[in-house]
Image 1: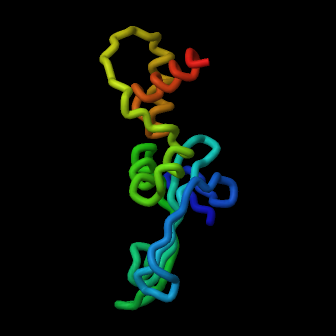
Image 2: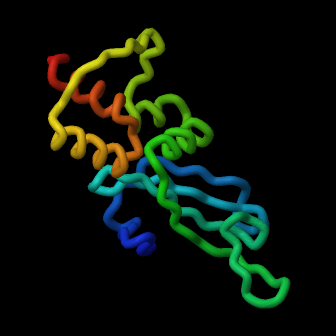
Length: 145
């Protein structure tokens, strides 16, 4: 499926399938299937389809519903939440990395150039990651060799 939402293209044929979940079976009106995708830009989205009583239903006439499909853009946090609810631990970690419960957070103050702060803001908006998470990921990648 290919869809433009808020001026951004979401295409299941070019994005990477990260995980999938199915509830019930296609002959059940409540049935639905969802697939989590990641675009080359790092953005996540959900492709879903389902029966006439699923959230993917489509109104075909007055009080008549049919199965349907949709694409929903997701923030990084929303993609993580969906994966927590619908995937097993190994699948989750293959997408978002290994969970390290022993990592404590500490507050660190520093000053960066305005241009760098703007790039950080844009990356945060694009990926849905917090600025702290982006900086933390960069530090770990740079020094954990």
